[in-house]
Length: 366
Ligand code: F6R
Image (cartoon, rainbow, N blue to C red; front, side, top):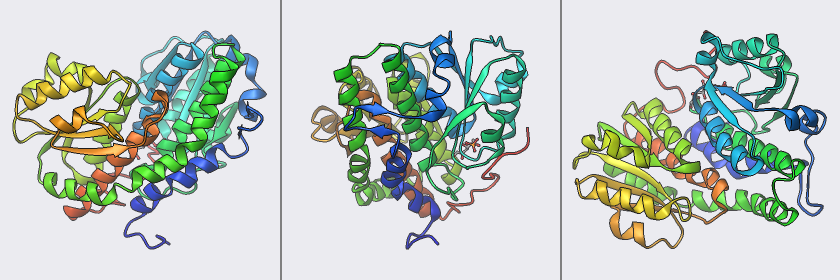
């Protein structure tokens, strides 16, 4: 059942090239230069007239929502707010009839997300679901939706659900950008062509597994760990930190790299591993100077870099390469080494990777 892998989590990490392909199969018609998504196309006016999009989710799905915020705003120029479903629900939010609410949930059963959906529906908003489990409560409660088609996710730590959520949300952002006339036909084609290569690039990123396992061996006894990223990769830093916390029980935090100087840099000493997502483009020079600030305080740098990178390699203690892609698609690649790093650290610490303590696969209490 684990297909030869030691854990479901590892199996699911390795399933990501296929899972992402399954997610855009039939929806992205690259030869015709088209995206077809019934859930969006049948309600296109709701999206085109929306003054804003509110995204609600929890945990890893909330991180996918943050990535989507950056992608929607970049491509489709629609204002997006991302909320923890639990907070949204309890803070008397302003919801307009013209708002579109997107709820993201792997299980489709998360109680807080469900409650946020009910609240939005009462206010007359159009509610769209991005779920993985077909026929789940959230997929039934929403007005329309798009499944991620990642296949069953058994490991409690979410992996392929995250990358396929980002894939679906990227398809939606591209479709809306096109319908709103915010991107040229030629850019649209370029993006579809690039998205089609992502599964191969994820597979390439997975080939760093043995190298990542060695890095994990070096840092497995750390008490704390920081994850830094900027722009599209800031949410990936949050997700990397969450993965480490939940399966290895090492305290980890994610920050936008530029926030370090506003406080967290005080934490840096020779005991502190700092995972920095430092891919090309994406404010690369700024991230390099953030790395210099950490090195000068003796922090240990694990850089997630673009293939062939030189500058970060010269500064960092370790680098893990991912293939080059268009900037807004980098989260689909930079996530992979962070999943593997957490996985190997947790395994080396003897933790129950698939069933971490205190956690359940779907959280049906509020
Ligand atoms: C993290 C994780 C949780 C879930 C969260 C939302 O690895 O599994 O943070 O992402 O409980 O769950 P869903 O997406 O099912 O609503």
